[in-house]
Length: 512
Image (cartoon, rainbow, N blue to C red; front, side):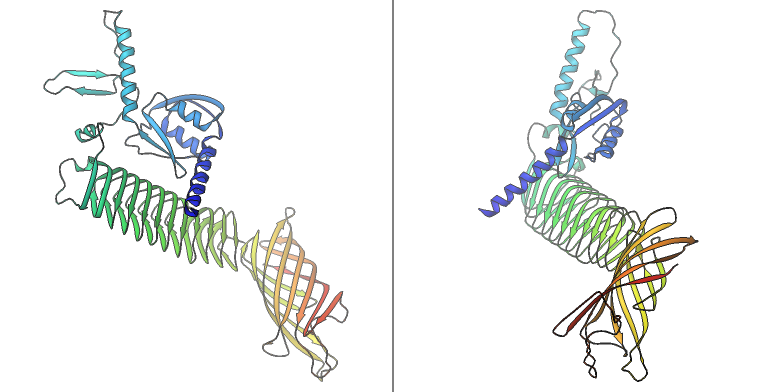
């Protein structure tokens, strides 16, 4: 019962998302603009993505429409009312196709209108523009059929299939030799007990082991082992091992193993091991190990790494790599050439990013150097500092301390040459030895004013709030805590072996 409830909630959520996209209000104004340009403009302005084949959809047909604040569903109905085009919302895509029954009805209406015009006039009437010619068998008489929209030429096989469904059921089927016209053969339902080979699928194909389609798939493919398609897929592919597509995919791909696409991907890709495509990925890619897009990527989520040329929205993984990042990268290591977004991780490498080197002085650690890779909005801090602390009880009267730390920061522009830098660091302090094995942690919260001096050089200064947490104890005097802290502090607390002290200090330096 629970799995049916989950399935119902999933379908309800998908349907609600589709309805919301189709019910958004749009305003359009076109006068004899090619259909392809109209669809592209709607996609860019309202983030509605259309999927269609330019071989079948007349994208050069000029259309005119003028609407203000109408639901997108109503606008699409009006736009395609006088054409054989119909649409469906599948996996976040508006899928367009030619409806042959609708084309027949439009042709019949056009012929009736023409007859009504010709009956009262016996004289020659100027013929309507021709879009298609049909030749009757057994003669050479040419009949001119006026059609408002161009319809692709159909083969005899396609015409025969209009009267019924082409259903294939077999145990083990393949092409020994490619029959004449096989590239136009379309199967509405194909059931392959073990392995099946077909030319085109326009409906559903189910295979026990493997489905192999030489050309296009429009609909659903399900296989126990894998699906192989030579050209484009519009719809859904599900398999245990993997899905391999030579063309583009618009819809959903799901596999426990991998998804491999030769061109663009639109929709959703989910794989247990990896997703790999050679074109653009205007999709959500989620994989157990990695995602790799040779072009742009919208969303990539994986456990090991993500890679893309341009990241439109985001990448989430241990390692994220993008040449240009317009969104967000979340991971342990984030790498990019340029970014208009932000990288959140332990190490953010941006070739044209913030990447500053710091030399500074403070009251806790007297001499400090730091490297700050990342972008101005969010950068990492790798910190090294040293100090000489006077201790009366010691024979030489001084202890050398040094610290190694890590932090994060953000630089906020206040004016043409002024910035406010907010930083937080945690530094492990080693006192009078090469490495202190006990807790001896110095926390710093800095708020500094940075002033640009010119050619990438800036100076900064500002207050620093310190919090020292230590397990150290002087065996000779019994004093608890670190010698880094001053004698007078704002707050001190000792619980068990842990001594904590807080105070306010300063920090100033130069950035290169």
